[in-house]
Image (cartoon, rainbow over all chains, first blue to last red; front, side):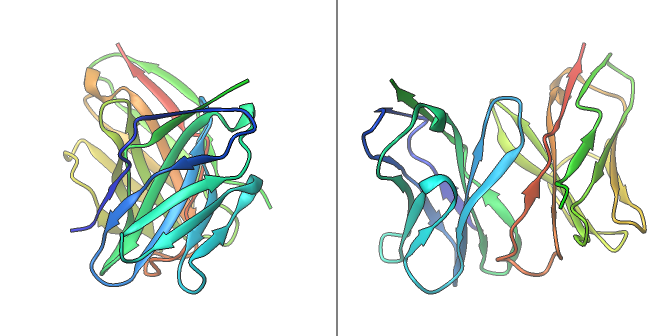
Length: 113
Length: 115
């Protein structure tokens, strides 16, 4: 069975500072990894995904994520945080025979002015 | 291209009633999945439909059911509502169900409150 862990319930960062939201996965075989963002009272918005190829994936709104196979991680990063980045972030994985993405429990990102 | 739409956006029901939620996928997407989101349990997969057939099912009681129409629109139904069914119900669409790297696109959700 596959699983996704987001070890931090909340991440606090000052505006202008770099941010990292952590995600680790457990998938047999090749993983397919996704990041989504959810603003209050909204659905999930797709940010980026890793299928194969370059370990550094660039996505929407200046976000990027680094796939690390040896550490089974797929951390979300942004060089300079904005207050408007404050939201709930979900990591998801599929693969290993499963076509249904498994979601982490989400990390609340708070960017302070 | 229009995104995934869900109706209604908000619903208030009482225990024992039943409810039907509707989802229209992105044009060209034939797979529709439903998720329940609660603060305590996070995002939980309910079921996925493709070509009017349920292809995958999560671990929910039989009170939760769904269907898909020939135009790929989907509905989910919850019968005999319980207080614990209060949640945000999210619909997501993608091209097909058998490609694990295919991106799901989510609708805005239906907020169901059971009193």
